[in-house]
Image 1 (cartoon, rainbow, N blue to C red):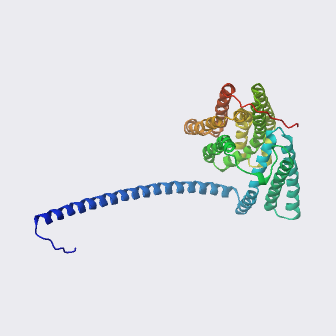
Image 2 (spheres, rainbow, N blue to C red):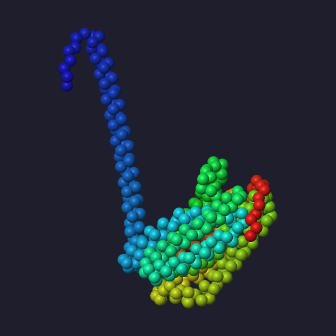
Image 3 (cartoon, rainbow, N blue to C red):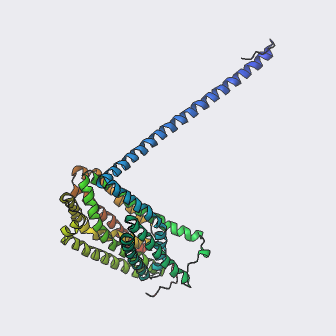
Length: 402
């Protein structure tokens, strides 16, 4: 401590006492600040520790899933699967552009040309598969390369057609720009629709955890039956695409009466054709299951899922077409909210109540039908009121003659 010379006067002592009090207050403030910083540091440490525990838990879950996949697949098959995914991802941007271009074509009524382009790319895909696998012996890599090339072809066909048009749908790279008003409308419809799609994946995680609890045979059997659900679901999804296209056209023209007609036609055709294919799968269920497996244990779980879920796949048309009709009228938030309630919330409640009380594979599969009924019923309940609430901005449109 430094020595100072002090005059022994009352005034000097009073001045030094003032400086001492100021120094003590400053020291207290610095101490309080240090304590607060230490508190914040400890809070941050606790938060980091919590986040670390969550990350480690997620990594353990991923590791378990990877271990299960490794148990079902040899190391060589796993490497081939990863190779396919890496090559396949190269074609994802082209697939996205193709989907956007096809949506533009469908928006003015040209629903056939996207189908022709997909058929052409599908034929090319098959031919390239044969050439690359049989002639060049590329194996899985050849299949992936063929898929990427077919995606590029379909994208090129869509863009070339849009480039050659001479109307408002003409596409030019040099004319690409963003319009704030249009962007806001696109995001207001697109973001909720995207969330709606992601919600399904999140809800299926909870169901998959229940499936995993029954062992490897249940996992394989469920995956087997899921292939048939894809076939049937695509029919309902196709009529949903038709519903959103023609609903938006007629809604923009102010023809609400025709919007209602389109909805009921797409709903009827979606349910009807989906159930026809489902019935075919049910009649020859053993034959179709035998295509994918020779294991009796796996086949049992596959047949249970087919009879519980695939048999009633037509119910998916109620929420797919209903959501499509609402989006066609510019109402995209409501289907997303109903999706969250009807899938994530409803399925979580089912898993912690019904499935917990009756822990059977049959009861687990029943959650699909129950959630579809809840979700589809919500859309059907909300749709009639939407026709009365929304007043379309009537615009002059010209439909493409197909």
